[in-house]
Length: 342
Image (tube, rainbow, N blue to C red; front, top):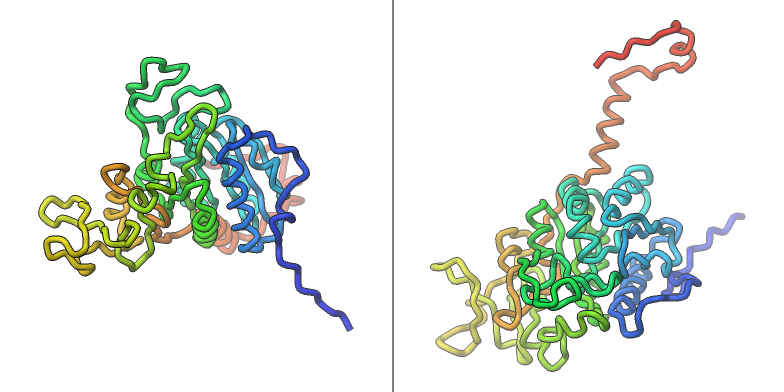
């Protein structure tokens, strides 16, 4: 009698490689990798069926520290490599680890295409609003006025909103979290993995050396309750220590505004209810910035659509059914020349 033994549940240790971690002490990447390992342990995909693809930058070291397959590629090209990996090995869980410079500057074009094609890969954007590996130049997400070695007087560039970029590229799943939110981040990553198609997760990450505290105005525990709103589908968009503040859609101006329950006759019925299938609402939520508004975290938009890899294989299968199986032997013995019809 053959006894089939159920595979043991994955642990964080199973997902940790033997490589020395070489991020700066205190880097937010340590928190991110902890959150990713916890999420993958919950998901339970075997390590040999999981692969991390990275480009260049601090985030790009990620594959070395995961006990999975990994590929450290070239600057900005991780989404293109990930597309090839998924197309040739559809059974793999493919993750892209990328920074704001790698993803949205030299890699912006490739990021756009993996999103618009809706390839079934999970893109994790580590956003610290700076080029950390190359010693602190301003990045595409750096705010106006950012002082850096390349902009000592302060950057005058308009920054990219990563979530709005993804939505504009046709993303069907976008979400946000923070490196230090260890109860929140794994749940967001599990949701991203469960989405069939391209998922885009922006993770606010602190660079302790070159951009320390850039997100402190909404991530510090002392202010988080009033500067973060954690979205849940079908629930009112409430925040504040006592959950007595909310976001309301002004139907006259079609803009979001902050209201307080109990003031001016405001009740919970007046509060906007989050609908993660509403792209217009997702764009408005993505635009909220502290301190004027709380920063929206969680799944901002999720509306599944046909996934690219499946569509490619369905097309190939359809052609195979319509055409007889070619014979290589017959082709080789059919003459000295071949005519290729366009």
